[in-house]
Amino acid sequence: MSLERAVGRVLHHLSDGQVEALAAVCDTGPGAGAALSASVVGGTVASREAVKALATEWAASDGFTGPGIALALRVGLLARVDARARRALPVWTGPGATGEQRLTASVLHELVAGARERILLVSYAAYTLSDLAADLADAVARDCTVDVVFETEEDSSGGYHGPHSTPFGAVEGIRRWRWPADQRPAGAALHAKLLVVDGCRALLGSANLTHRALSANLEAGLLVRDPEVAGELESHVLGLMKAGALETS
Image 1 (cartoon, rainbow, N blue to C red):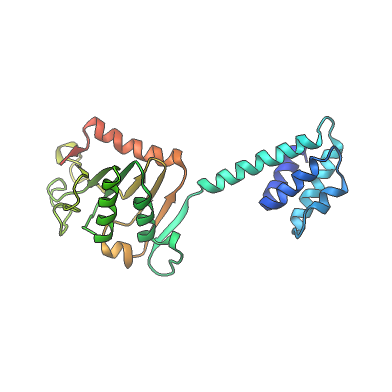
Image 2: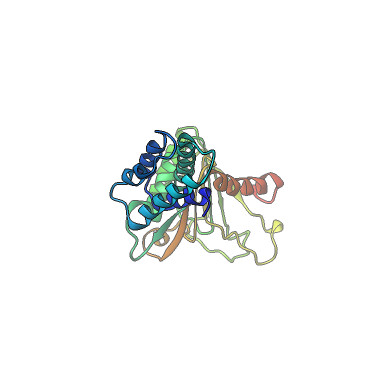
């Protein structure tokens, strides 16, 4: 095992607090030895073995100071914390869905209510949901740019049937987009379900904007918290708008 792999093993098995405690001991100087193992309180067998392996590899390597090892541990810890913050989270509607962060309707509200600059909303079936309509109206009042892209009966050649010809029609200040029939292959549907907020967070999944999809159906989705991925989702739709594949209605 190399020293690099030993550091990686420590980062895999130790908690954030344990890694920081270990780094603090390393800061005291080279060859901290037995003090390394003593620094991990309440660790598992795997974590203790990882620390022991780090001490062994450190002793067998030349030119690595204690502060150098501490820096490697802290850089790895920062990368781990950042990766955790960007990790996508599952979102559900239906049986067994628990926790506010896992409920489709709750995540939808959280994202729209938290928007500060812009909202992009795409859905196949879109009904005028009163709670979402209120959130969109509030967003417009905060000077957010709100773009909505919905399927229509006309453009889908009757493939889509909905009770509302203009979903959220009472919400003033939002920009409406459609995928015109002459811009799509025969029989194609605008079937995406996507919400992107401020270009940095997104909700992507199977749920349409209907009461049943947000309260009764078995629906699955992902809350995307990686700004790069969310930005790419937004950029693709904005590119379709710019190219004329999507038109304002």
